[in-house]
Image: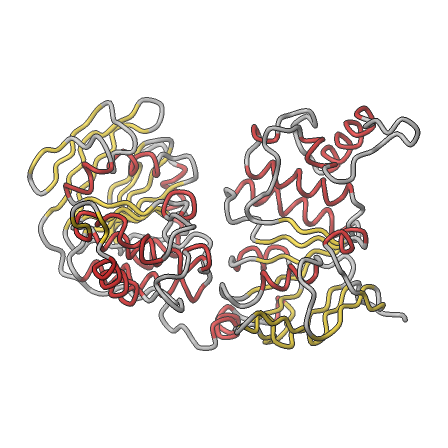
Length: 502
């Protein structure tokens, strides 16, 4: 049957016990097209990927490849038909070489001797890497590569199986702007050679930069498909969350109080130097700059994860020396890490146990956890930050990214804190969850917390902060207040060697 589409999903439904993960969804993909798929966490995107790649068998509907109905019984079935997926968190064998990772599961074998043809595999891997513009050898150990380089290896792996449909799931979430641009280049190169790409992302800039079409799922259902040039940000947000978000940045007006924190001349050799600022009660102080500017390192030092060589820290008028995170929390300083899954949560623990982890002294008696106290505290704080889950006994790993982030916020509220450091608090969450997290941050500021917010997103900094400190190569180059806080001014300061104080 003649068709213009390489892939079609018609009325696909997938049901798990008590849950419709996909409810009558549609999707069409043309050869040589980059088609964005967007939706909030929990919209059904992950299940959609697993249906296409043969991990799940749909309970209803049909999948067509080049107009022919297919029935994938295993992931190998999908792979042999030219479908590959590249995930946000790269699954690899870090102790093996790039070549071994590329050909894992489909090694080149001598027909007679059954020996692995290493020379041919290294040559083919080298050809694929050069085709993608990679600057590393196929004999490099996979674990020695950056996340961006590991993603290039995953793309090479897809090409080694002759994939003509590649699904990219949040590929830019952990990349710098420069690395994202390199990924865009590779995606466009593949598109121009006829490869069809499904690009799943929370970032509007990814969609506008790459895609010609965008499809939106919401609550496991198909909402619609549009030409990217024909839909506005506002309409796209309505399609994704089901309502207008009239105020994405709900910054409350707060009368700033006493000085909580004063940092003077803070330095750590090789990372940052002469970092100085103050933080008042009720203030949201932004900390931004290009990746590698030293923002996270400075904040981790304030929380006692790293030590500093120079400088002085004064908390509520008293000079302090923080040697560990426990020291920081006892003083009243908390930290929300950039990587919630590796540093912020114990994924195999329940929501409740994660929330009360910093408050073990409050909920234990004679060395045993009081289950009733744990449940009461965690339930109250989970409701306060709006965690969406069936129960506080659900595993943290079962939550969407936005809800996992809310659990980390709830953890901070169990401790007796007055200063909270937020490192990329909305990284990797959808627009609806972002709005909810901004509400939490604004509410905490109105309650008198002093907040330091590290962010690479300039609209977020401009929308939420009272002041912003811009860093470049380990030094603060500018302080901007709300009147002088523009994207141009922030960008200029992040690239300028001269300090600008407004």
